[in-house]
Image (cartoon, rainbow, N blue to C red; front, top):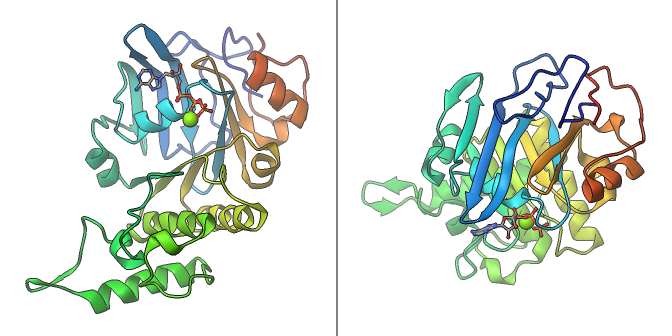
Length: 283
Ligand SMILES: Nc1ncnc2c1ncn2[C@@H]1O[C@H](COP(=O)(O)OP(=O)(O)OP(=O)(O)O)[C@@H](O)[C@H]1O
Ligand SMILES: [Mg+2]
């Protein structure tokens, strides 16, 4: 397990003073963050955070309330550009200073509440701001077809009509539409900030299945969740933030429930679970 902090055993200090988190696979991750810091006035929300988001894998970003998960998500999404640190996209340095920058790289973010416009229908939401035109008219047929094909491709089958307003959808259906929207725009990285927090059991199931399909499509997925069942079911990798610091990052097999909880609540763990083959650092 890569336990970041005062790492030993071959972990070199990163730009933010942390041990470098090693990628759990040898391939270059789609997005690599190094030494990302962010403050708001006197509040230091992120301290030299390292994070790897590999393609075709789900990384669960965990941590207690106020750990910095949403700030880190918004940093990647271009809403809160970092004060310090480096972002590498497919191995090349990038600056993501606006949501537009993030979208042009292929980064889509799905928030629990802010994902969709309530009063618009599914097709309108999926094409909001990127409508297809037929000369000067909206090309409704083409947009309907693309929206329907994308939803069908993701096995989202419970919506009655793609012309129904989003306000009439269940929470799980809304999240499904938000995720489908991300997929339709050829995203490479999808960030989901607590996508199942307000959902019932069946709706959570729907969204977890969808997350697995995103990874099967080869996308990199980062999902924030407080729910250990969800995390252990869907994640390939776990990254734990504690008070703005990345305290552990590794394959899911390197954690058990107790060690994950330990890292989330105290920033460390005395337990050593499964040898994942990646580097092991110790606090
Ligand atoms: N816009 C902001 N202005 C000032 N402080 C902020 C801002 N956004 C976040 N913070 C602070 O940054 C820290 C991290 O907040 P963040 O929202 O990232 O936590 P979180 O890990 O997402 O928590 P939760 O699980 O409760 O959603 C908190 O101390 C929070 O008060
Ligand atoms: Mg949050």
